[in-house]
Length: 110
Image (spheres, rainbow, N blue to C red):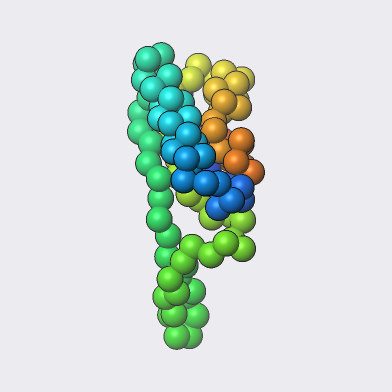
């Protein structure tokens, strides 16, 4: 089965020094490398955002905004046998060390 980790928040990231940010990036790279070594890696990317307000004016506002706790900042797609295994893998995602939250979803095939 394919699973997706959606990375949200990471409130502590803004407080890090450049050296600490570099260390954090290395943790993300190591997480991806581990998935590759285990033959689980499918895809991963960081995401940028624009907040689109669809109303009578269809206003497009530049974002992201710090107060947006639900902002998805990146994702990993990987394979696992089942939800239990996917959950164990997701618990190692570095986002959890930086005040972030992760959302784990199973990818559905149609």
